[in-house]
Length: 129
Image (cartoon, rainbow, N blue to C red; front, top):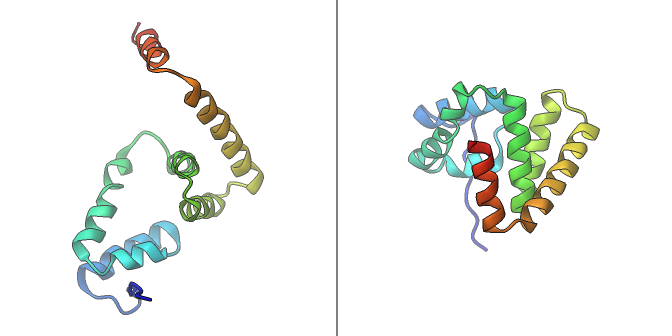
């Protein structure tokens, strides 16, 4: 079975080392999928660049992570759910708070799933008014 080699942040060099060091500083860990992306400095840089615009956002990092957790839950990506939960725990959020946020997200997603395009259009008009 083929496997993708992952880059060890301790032995990385150049741009890849700088990028991985930045991830380590931000998250306290370098996730395996980031280490796999590091095989291509361009891919790693592009992926990490997606987070750049959020750096100056008015929304704090904990809220950004809660949003990311909801998206991961909705996408059904357990790897992402676990990763975002770990970041939230590191930021000081309790497991109970995380579970409560996940339950709220599930309710919101269930309600959203019942909406029709017409419902959504009406909501957009009400917000614009």
